[in-house]
Length: 199
Picture: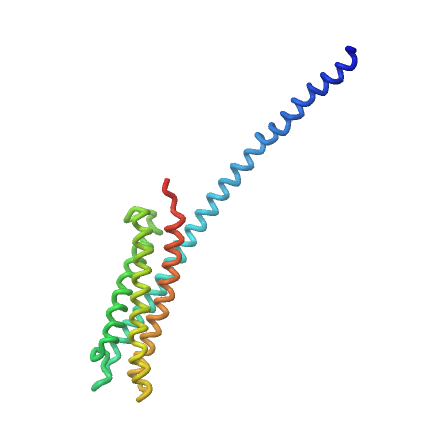
């Protein structure tokens, strides 16, 4: 009987050893997991940098179109009834173009300062909230101003198509383009706000 027990004991002795071998391999493979963690962090930094630069680019183009809407509307004075300040809708377009230019200009200056020095003027959490709501409010005001002036311009064009109505239409178009860009910037701001870490 001692002979049958020996193979059994060998099998028992081999089982713990064979069971320990895969666990040793998992422990050794943890270094690969650490490398993947570092690459994930680097990937996240690159994505955050791309979002910052993308937001800066969108706001830069938004500033350009807001300034164009402002300049076109201010220069839309052609005498008699062809002066923009005689119409409430066009004054609203001008006011929102000024507001949008100021907001996007200040945001661009803040972002350039942040990218060049690495120092944030406002805390990260508050900055994300200001970006998100600021972009949304200004985008809403831009589309509101553009949509309020379209019916007036269409009525004037039915009677007579001239340089005054063409200039008004181009200022409205510039505000619409600025709206699209700031709406995209608001989407990026919303993404950054939803993905912020609270740790």
